Image 1 (cartoon, rainbow, N blue to C red):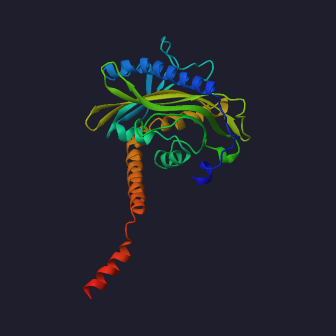
Image 2 (image 1 turned 90 degrees about the horizontal axis):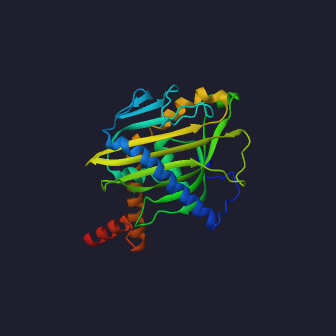
Image 3 (image 1 turned 45 degrees about the horizontal axis):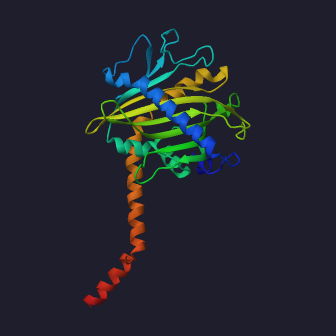
Length: 295
């Protein structure tokens, strides 16, 4: 993955008014509450997956990815076969680690953060930050609300038969409180449209709506529930899209490692900055001084 894919913003600056930012914040709250209300019964109900509704598509370590059966007609069906012709996707399982480490691997409000995360998680191929609405702080390091663009490589793209898909979306991360008082980390992406963000040549604009919740259930065990829809637009590549999307829904397996590496990098950079601030001597100079004293 070339660094240039994370340094060039293909769009003009996206200037949002305070009113537009407030609307996006309200949209984020609404989506989080709706998804939390839908997914909370999964955590409370013993993490049971209905086999009549969900078909196992992929499994790795302690994570399983399901696709919603097209014949399922329940009131809670997520797939809209008449419009997307794509199944909803459900990813559930457990990951070793600490919730804060996982959330540090999830949150990526800046271009540099996106670049680092992509090097570990491999969940997209090109990206840009279009507008920052809420940035993490020392008091709330995982709270972030950002408008982004990303591009995903589609199999056979290099043949010229199909084009890459890209998405413009609102991304939110943070914590929600469960009814029992426990905290659950959340991460959601939801497509939005802006007149000034036009479609790019040689790419097809898709739609997505994905929400994941993460809960610490034991000292070193995190429960994961992630659901969503990704419509790449265009009948021709839908059969190619589902495997790409199910693989992307396994990304929580890599969040904790990503978070740990980011924390390690941050600590090293902080220590280096403090050493420079306090004028720590060059190790080579110290050695030479000691040699002179001994002589």
